[in-house]
Amino acid sequence: MALKYTNRRGQTYFLHQGTTKTGKPKYYFSLKPKGNLINVIPDGYEIYENPNSQVYLRKIKPKLFSDRELETVEQGIKQYSKVKNFIIDVKDKSIIIYLPDQDVDNLSDILSELGGRDISSRHIETLLTYGPMMRFLRRKDSKKFWVQRWCFRGSVDDWIDLAAGEDLESLVKKYAPHLGQESFYELYGF
Image (tube, rainbow, N blue to C red; front, side, top):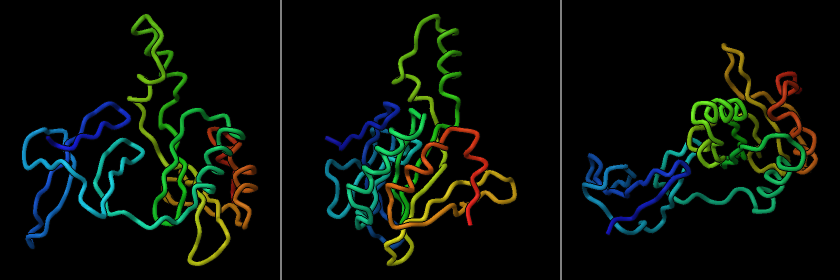
């Protein structure tokens, strides 16, 4: 029996094994339940679902952030911001906050009007795509955290430094309220 993984959208993926050009094994997930299926995660690998529900098998990476730091960011967003839908992902040396690309309330209203009934948040979640908005990162061997926001100017499309400090909780408290608000676009740092 093949190893299956169901993502946030309810799609079931199957783990496959192939080979590289040099003959080494490679692993990947596919929606197709046919092919060279395997039933166990190879040693040193983990299942990873990115913010837009794509599923991968990747090598286990060293943990750069403590559970406490991740919880500080998640709880801070819930406590200090008005956003309801968000995803936190750890990539490289960053804790990245992703927000929906769609207006969730408008989408819910439109779907309710079309369907003539209330649409559950679970159904809405299957339609959402996410984009990066803010991140907290550590540079090299520093104890400091930097907070950055995504810049949406057409020629820039990159991260903008907002502030730095050793107290992650203070940074989250100061900047999380801007997520999903017009004030987000007025944030500029040093």
